[in-house]
Image (cartoon, rainbow, N blue to C red; front, top):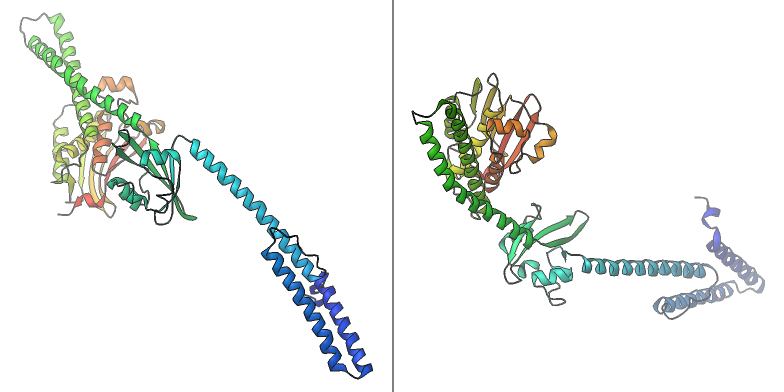
Length: 436
């Protein structure tokens, strides 16, 4: 940078004035024969003026809230003006942040959900009114205390340790009006602070419980009269004196009664899985042997695909409930066989890798359109209602698969191309795999 440009502005003018003053002092010293004394006197006066301006600036910085900025010329005036601009800008941004904070507190106080702001060590920084009421937090007294010491729920504590790896966790608070609360942890990579959103899901939990109880009770009540009806239908079919005109209608009634019995059994199984709060048993289940039995059962049926292939790539077992795992695999194999034509094929595969254990059932059947895949595990959802009723499906098989998989910490993946077939894959975590 050129020297002239570097000295432009007020600072450059001050340096030029200092240089001029020193030049005059030099000339005066040469004329009067006291060069050293005159230069020292001039520099002393100049230094005293700078110290005075520095003291005025220091006083103003300490008392700037009550005093006006000092009227100083030259570079010191520029410094005062710059500091004053920075201070005013800071005051403006501070006032804006205060307004935003007040607005945020008003909004969070009015929101129907609770909110708790946590620090890096899960210490409570702030919470709104609903969070205080539902979680039993006390204003001011609980600030700075770790939330685990106040909300002593094992599931919530594990949820915090996992840094919100799951979408949310639901806890029960009997002492707070018998409430069920859903807590969702919000974190950002840019900040160590976390926000816990608290929702009151008591009504949803109670409605779901009523629905489960109704389905279970209704299924139990319907099963008894249905058994009686099916028994009489069986007796009528075997009656040798039955009119031939009635034989086919009665056979159809028996088929429909059997179908209703299957639906009721599936409803009871689904209700049992949903109502069960305990983890499944830790039996060592021979997956390969179970899949081989399922294949043998499928091959013994009259209406089945021409080719049924079993690929066992591992001898490992799974830790879990044998009956529930059998329900998972049998539903998938049964669905594959139902929707695959006689000239098609079904492949059942079991393998283990670093991600865990996997069972895949592939078929060359009718396939599923992409828009239907997200809803396949809903109760009674049918891709083709007419075809499903003709085949005899209940619409509950995949719902049972989903709930049984969840109890085994597993997930279901579906891949399908309409007209070319589908692949249903069960993924189990590594801790469920027992290597033999």
